[in-house]
Image (cartoon, rainbow, N blue to C red):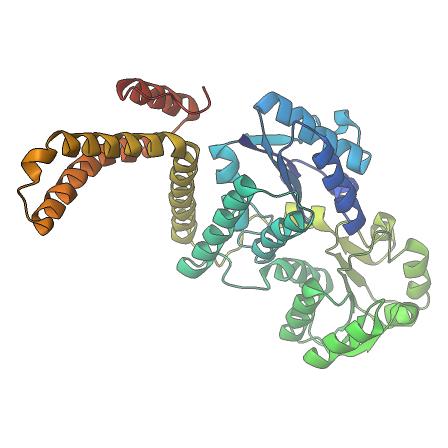
Length: 423
């Protein structure tokens, strides 16, 4: 079975398409059932974040796997295949590992080094494992990706600032309002993105921050940690009327901030409003951005306004890519070793058999040796055979490309008079 990845990301898709493809909890359950029922999918892991939706599969071949994984994406989310034609990308075998390792390292994020993606990759595997959809092939590549992401964060400056993603939106807010100092802010949601937003707003000197959430307990917990006020979504109309800045980052399936709600809040005031929508699917109705004195920035707006995080240096980025390349090479060696394990075992068994046969042939001569001397001779013979086998086995593990490696493996099996496993 080969590893194949299909996906849509912020690089080639509009936020509207990402919204339609985003998987909620119930959607994941149904999608994994579809993968289990498809004979062309042995294993599957779905990664669904604000900036990308990707499905990884262990499949019998590229073509069969591509069609099967694409069906899962389209049928699970009710998206026509034609809608995916332009932005859909695929990666196969080593390229799939390279892509996932790059994603987990934050090198493919909208804002370079975005810190949340590593935990999202880890959670995607955990969820797939809970649905009994992940097996040894995808578990191996996802664990490799997580290890790569950790190395990049510990050995380079990429991803060093945990709130850089929200910082990009805050920069645009400061530009729209002429600074954030002494402004009044509302943060809708109480998750990790909301916590980062509160931290950024405090750092930039806002006068007040109010956290609103559907769960009052979660809003209170975040507010107490950040010295903010709190309330539930019923307080939203009043909070909007008093706010200069609104940041929304909920996990809601529908619109949270509608045009009529914002329009009501604008009545009787003569100051601008900045709205930052960090959610996918969107929390804020797009038409809000066309209201007078309102600046709305969503994921698409961040994409066009922020190219790279200025804190990173070219050296950091170069080093991070070098780490990815090194980890992909190591993963390839491990995967080839696993795939060719039966051949390697057969070669070692053949070596052991040759040693045993030769010891038996010279048994009468060896009978004159003391037990410790016989043990030394036996160890020497086995050591010579092991050293002779080590070099071809090690070289075969390092050969890239399944086709080239298979040709060498077949030749090696023929030279040793072995039957290649699987043939």
